[in-house]
Length: 386
Image (tube, rainbow, N blue to C red; front, top):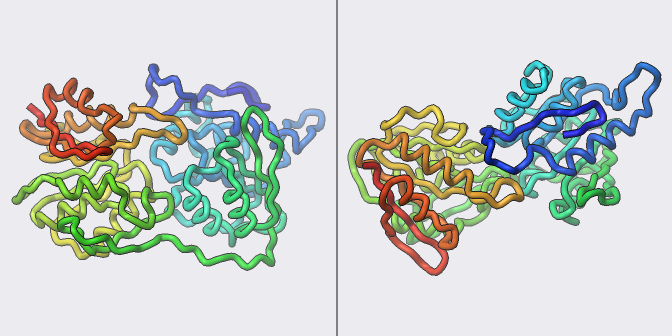
């Protein structure tokens, strides 16, 4: 990536030489050009050094922004474990010490004072709302607030949210399908209360979790209702008793793993997701329902770190988007990880849209794949580790 401060070598995480997706886009470049132009520069002075005080970067996708701004010792706030790992790798790749950037999650307390707030607009408006409301008390009238995103990511509701939480907001002209958001903090603004996390009751007729409570932190899929894919899977979960090691892989708000734990109190359930918000939601959902038995909650890169042949059952609803890009890379890594951690005879159960053709991948990996259930939109598939 070309920046006003020179060239950066950047990669997504985990790094895959076959992956053609870049670790930055035009909106990252647009924001960095704008920041450099704010300070015309003096002899012997680098552009962009007008940035002073505590610089906070929210939603940096793969660490491109904080790597470019490392000289200002920024704070990165992200919901993504993969983003944090990508940031560490990209800092090292460009000869920057990891300590130059303070890495925080969306679940951590934010800095007490923010002098520069840079926001890479997330896909989830709810996550943006939550983060702006959490940061608002630290923003003052002198804070420089600039958002960035591709034109298709910035909507009227995005601008209204900045204006409602922080103050008057306007946008730039588009450049290479990217746009900037400029917000002037208003200390007299009466901000709304933060509505997150959100709680709701599940419907009846879905097995062990019927009528149970769900807790959703901002940005987690299906914040106010049970999605139809998960509902379909809940109606076809494997029935088993006894001590079993079960993984809810890509757990989201934890409804599936909680259903397993309620149906089989002897099961040991591991909830795994790369989203800090999701794992916090899963734990809150589990605790809210007083589930007996043992559970573990882990933020991480899929099944990395789980011993080979140590799991009896993996339940998975894999995502098929990486931000705005449609890709099966994550699903493939989840399936291969599941094959590694399953014991002989262990099972992977997958829910997915019919058109995604997951049965082809599962047959290639496991040698066979059984159709458990289907409807016009979804399929539930079962693969057994031989």
